[in-house]
Every structure is written in C-alpha cells, then in structure tokens.
Length: 268
Image 1 (spheres, one colour):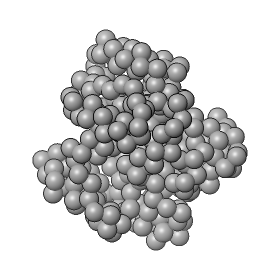
Image 2 (cartoon, one colour):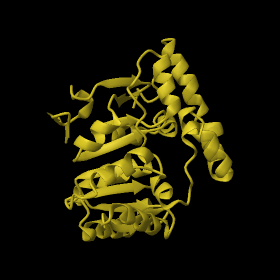
Image 3 (cartoon, one colour):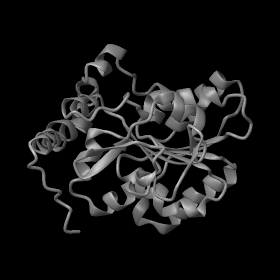
Image 4 (cartoon, one colour):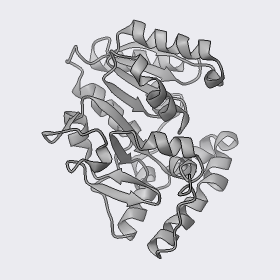
C-alpha cells in the first residue's frame, strides 16, 4: 500500500504516514478521500461508523480483527462532529458509499482493477454489477455472490464463497455482510484469496449501487441525519441498531471527553 508516497508498515496504526486519532478503545486515521482513492491500491480499508464502534465495546474478536486493518476512516457524520467537539478533528468524513463509486470511476480504464461483489440479498449484487459496468464502460465487476446468512456456521459454504471469488480473477473484493461480520471474513480468509490485492468491507454499498436502498439527499448526511433516514426507510431492520445499540456510544464519547472513559475490553 502507498499513501502520499509513503510505504506501508505491518501495522498501520504505527505508520507515520497515517496520522491516528484515538476514539474510545480504537482509532481512525486522518486521511482524505482524494488521497485514498488515488494512492491506496493494496491492503485493507475499514470505514468506521457508529454501529461498529458500539460492537467494538463488547466484541473482543472484532476488536482484534479491527487492529489488523491498514486504513480506518471516519464513516459517520456523528463521529466526525464528535471528534471536532473533542478537539481531535479529522479532515473529512470518508464513507464507504462515497468512496466506492469514486474508486471504480478512477479505475474505469485500468484493466488491472477488477472487482467482486460479495453480499446483499440474492440478485441485488447482479443489479449493482450491471449498473457499475454500464457506468465504467467495461466489465469492471467480474463476479457476484450472495452468501447464506449463516455462512460462518458452514465450512462448505465458506469454501464455496472463496472458490467463487478466486475463480473470478478479481483483484478487489467488496464484502457487504454487515459490520463486524464482513471484517472478520476478510481478515480470517484473505490468505486464501491470493489474487485479491484490495479488500473493502463496505456494508450497504451494494444496495446503494443497485438502487434497492436509495441514498438520502446530501444535506441529510451532512447534518448527521442519515441514521434517521434509514430508520424511516427500514424501521423493522434498523430500530434496535439506532435506538438501542448506538446511543451508548455518545455517552462513552462524553465520558472520554471528561477523562472518565474505561475500555470495557481492556482485560481481554
């Protein structure tokens, strides 16, 4: 991986090329979209949103996986505002759903970049692939798959997914299996996908690209209200995440600001 001409080290948290901003028991890197799209060509990217932060307060396995990612961006307007209020701002919010279309258009004429879409409900990734390929004017999406929901419990299903990715010849893998699950899939199995150079766990991006989940107006996102928009669109699927799981993160950030935060996983 190269960002701004500085080579990667084994643990990006220690890479002086990537300024790190601490956030509770984790961190984000202070990177900008243009640099990431133009110069990051190999490695792993995690786009951190509030739901992930909540999971990282209770999931030790996810925390261990998190620390193995090369670049961690701030993918939340709420977290962006919180970092500013805490006096440790990052330059900009770099969301996965904004990053990916910029990435594939930047590489639309680069035959060395081909992408596999893994995730979404059956048929959705195929719709996304057709639309992206039409935009780029070539078959940049070379394969898709919709894994079974409980794929982690079935070694044969895992093998099938990996075989499908490898058979496609893709050099970039976008995984949309939900926060925590998609990152674990990448870190646990990336060594079995030797042709893939860039790993992107990007959640609902496949749905956005397919158009099955319309994106909110830019002003909604800029005001930090995307969570409310998605709650209104998918109340049954989203209510627990946005009304139960995520609010404690704001309380934890306030405690960090007051010097009272304690890492709940520090003993693990």
